[in-house]
Image (cartoon, rainbow, N blue to C red; front, top):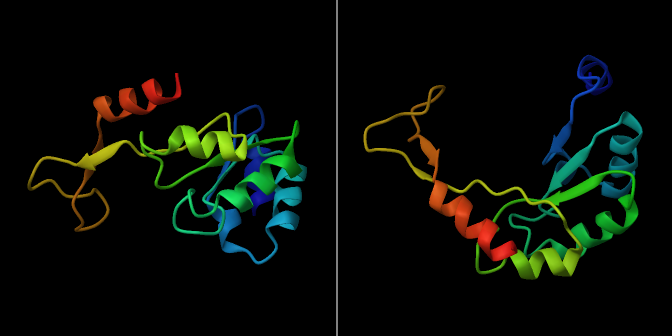
Length: 130
């Protein structure tokens, strides 16, 4: 299935988002993702947040060097994003920069509250990394 999707997305930047955290052998999964042609791999290092998974993410960054981008995700805030990036050697980051949307709005596909990207949160993270 993934191979078919990769063929269909030929020419586009592709990201394997969080899937690698759901398998037992992340090093093998990383090699398979690279072989399939993923441009980047988004991971929290098999933990809830990138800060606690930074050792695994750093290992993946080193393994993938010059073949794909390993991008940390989850829990990246102005207070820790620079430290985590430096510790693992990341050049790209995945962060939601969102907060609950206006009261009463619901998510399109569920009864959960909607979230919206906040430009000030994006600015804070960019300024922290500048």
